Image 1: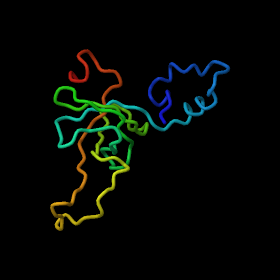
Image 2: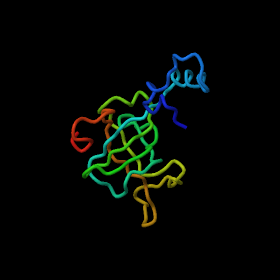
Image 3: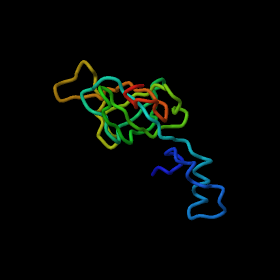
Image 4: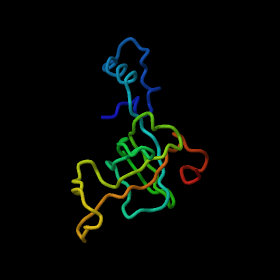
Length: 142
């Protein structure tokens, strides 16, 4: 459900050409887009690796921001891509990644004092947006 403009490949879509299949939809998507693919990094290792589909939250306001599209280990850090709202796509923007997918059943509201051995709550991991294109040495060098 991601179009080339949102994925950062808009320069390869020749919107100036008078006709191609899907041109009207591409022009509309380019003018009204509200999300963008960003590169992010998570320092350190958590109990679970970040996977596609995990929820991304605005690191300042705690509001839903998007979803992880891919992630891998680069040295001791996890580096990945996420589809987030455009206002969160600037370099060094703080994000939080929750290691659960939107389709997973969240636990009911639990009083922390009443938690037992089978109760769980999602714990976020701090992340930050990286530049779209890494410098010399790749993501581990940043």
